Image 1 (tube, rainbow, N blue to C red):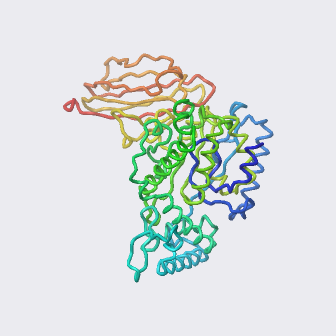
Image 2 (cartoon, rainbow, N blue to C red):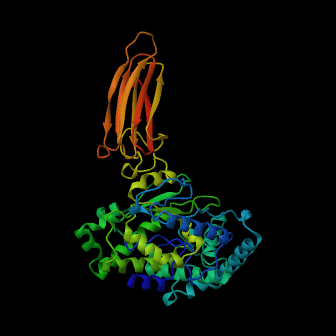
Image 3 (cartoon, helix red, strand yellow):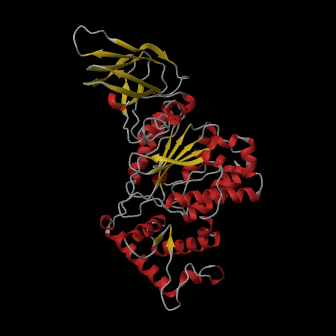
Length: 482
């Protein structure tokens, strides 16, 4: 209950759910009032939500939640039942696409910002009267956030729209947030922080960027299980000094990631947060909760509208309990950005948002060091229960054919053979059909030297009662390049 009380006392942002773990995702819309007016179509979405919850009760919590595209008749294990999420579409950053009321608010905010720059209000608002940028007294000051000037070009509009959306297009409140953020960045020593050497190989395993989702958003992986390591936990959170250093490291990581975004209108200016809760330290870790609380406040106050989607995988029961406690205090817009999946559904869920060539092998994809790269597209096939699926690679000349293949969860039979085109030729068994267990190497890498026209045939025999996801890709090298 203590945790629930803390959550109720905290301004819960649009893009944040308190993970009770070190990293807290950037805020989109901090709620200054818990009961925030919801966006358009809220009533319709709320009815859908209520219907979904009722459906979940009827299934006695046996249905695991994933996303809006989940088939209705698919039921998971009872211990993996997870609350459903809705659909969220990012608002446009192109000014011409905005409703007139939002265009007007943007113009009003730009006027206020320009006026403040002319009067050096941002400098005056800072600690000890220090200036953000050294400028001549007679000229307007210049202020940039995330490498983008507040007033300069179309990229400036994109930045200002983030603050407006964070404050429901209330111009004066957005302006106050901008001033507060600029003051905090100066006090936090942001420009100096970017130059500091805070690298830590152990922390780099817990938080890192890898690839993009299907819409082009960079993906940040937050692997909370890394903090089960007692030495890492002690080194990171055991006292206030260490927690402050971790916070600075995390802010530095976020800042560097943000500066790689495209702030041009219509560009990608948000990040997907992938939160792996497998073996995550529980809510009893006081030091962890303290670090989380500090990060939550800073991020929700100073990083508006930077999350495209929050993906939570390998979700444990205690996290669901926390999520249910805070759910009534979140707006529908916030909830619609959350996607939850238990262990058995994590890979399948991630593949809906992240292409297999971009998703690490650890999480169900094919992205790894080796012959194939992210430019080598992966084909995804669903193999029905009690069904056999074949994949054919036709070749017309001598070559070396390489391929990667995996079935999520395996427990199917796999075989490969070469069938020559010429009549009377013998079929060559490349891989005798065998049962591949889920505990084996997740990705099978094979190649075969072909000296005559024909085809390589891969066979997946799924005798289980569950559908399986097959991923594969191939590469052909002329014999002369061997």
